[in-house]
Length: 263
Length: 254
Image (cartoon, rainbow over all chains, first blue to last red; front, top):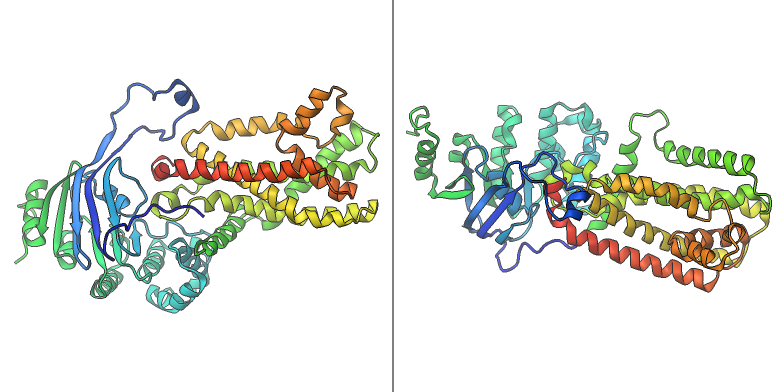
């Protein structure tokens, strides 16, 4: 129906390019503008100044790379993912992601509450641009992965938050992603399912997918990622191997003593 | 188009979500307009009787269903992007499918009611005519016009929260200025007022066209048909242009 902004111009499949990216957000409680402001031609005076979520960030991620992204709350991690996913445009700079981008920013965001799990698989698949036949081909694998059993035909409104997460992840994990963007979504599942998710992510990486993972779980990032990007105040303050990055990050956070480094 | 399947799924979701948990469910889509029609019939058919129009209840109803479709569709489309904020903020997909699904659901209800009403009207008035062949075209134009209008108000309301209240306030006088319970030529003898009511109100040619075919059993004037076609193209392209232009920041403002 609508034109999708071209996010894959001039990059290879699975490649991510961010050049001099900047993005600011207004932090007013009421995010919409009123007609009065438009007619007068300015916004309400006073209130907090816009927050610069990204400040001239450049990133070059090759196909198949695994990148963890860490930083304090408000450092710009989620903003970066939303920019890479093409949900939020940049104020200036350039962003490009090659191939099928699957963003897991909030699992089950598009679920119809009184649709069954099975119906939601179709709805969610469609939201990612798949058609009926493509979803049918993946249906069994998704249901099996989710371990929901007979609950797959119950409305998702009756699901526990863990079941909700399992279904959301199972769908996203079977979309043949070239670029995987994951934002702290694994924290809800039980340990067994978290391990299963990690294994599935590893499978996708082995198949050539690129991973950008935002998490506060340092151990998870150390297990999953080879490269680390540390953001602070919207700027990239570290970009390199995860072994060197983690100590840097802990020093930045002032938690170097509290967290034992890996043997 | 790969997203046609998404569109179908969004329509299903819209249908199910709106009256979830209510005993009558989807039937509310039909009951609401029927109650409205009953109320208007009581008011204009029985209390303020305009007796110079034959089969007045049918005359009234045919105009009224067109109005109810248009007003319900744009009123529910206006806040639709905000209502689906969670989805807009977290997923990347063509956002026009949201107001599009809202309008389509109303269109389905409208077609059901219009079909029932047409059968009754044609049976009573004997207006079965080849002019009926024009109906699909007129209805497609009405759908396009309403969709364009809905795209515009939904994206505007996402940025400027006054749009939906303004729209619902404007719909009331708009209703009374539309030739629904009266014939334009019977309320004014001044030519310029007549022209203004006929052409100044973009909805009036749609009402006239549907009524000419169903209630009158004749082909609408060429001028009316040209207006119906032209206005639908202009409104659809205009609404889509505005939507595309403004949708970039949508995930930030909803």
